[in-house]
Image 1 (tube, rainbow, N blue to C red):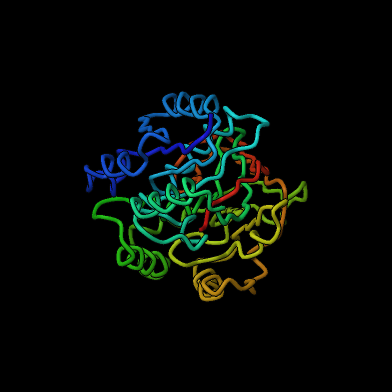
Image 2: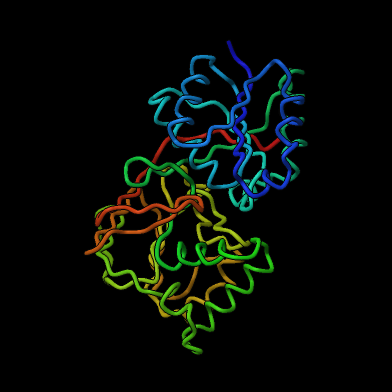
Length: 310
């Protein structure tokens, strides 16, 4: 048996604003696919087992980056060494950074309609390969970050609806925090003190604004610090930010243009393994979803995934 499997996150902000979307997706999918809306990790693993039994060809994810991370983590655990189905991101979340980096545009219903039509008509999908990262031995995704990266996103998600305008406001307040000594100083710019190694080589500093990695070049809001990742599928692009906040702000235009940074205190390299060892539990994000790890967190290479882009 084969077909299309669709996972939708009913709790995403975008889906909550459009409660009739589920009916629309079910109508588009028809009887040639499987539509699921799990509410937790355990439920997603049950869905993954059902998709494995039915040998689906295409996995469609209706949610944002966090939903994609949860779905793909469950799929990898259930599928093991088996090849994952092709993955189509339907842009159903507040943050659709991974889809944006792949050039995917459109509404969830339009994107699913395109996938279903091509599948039924036997038109080959255009795909690109991307590698997943494995974080802490159990979380899979395309983007990892702690310190300033995860702290920024937490502030961004709070309060009013997330939007590009809000992102700019939070970014400006973050850049100004060292000067104004505002309330964001301790929240976003609190240093990460840790021993960090890239492929076993210890970085020469122990105080960081944050450690980040990506196998997708776009970190969000148009910034592409992981510019080397798409062309190097066997590696992740690792970044250790050990500069001062204003020095990081000076590098943002280069990150926006996907150019190498100039600061010697921002450590960039391709790697297959990152190890972070701190004297306290490490808080981090994977694809915009937040997790609390132990005092040691490792980021390694995961399986490759075929992403549907057309």
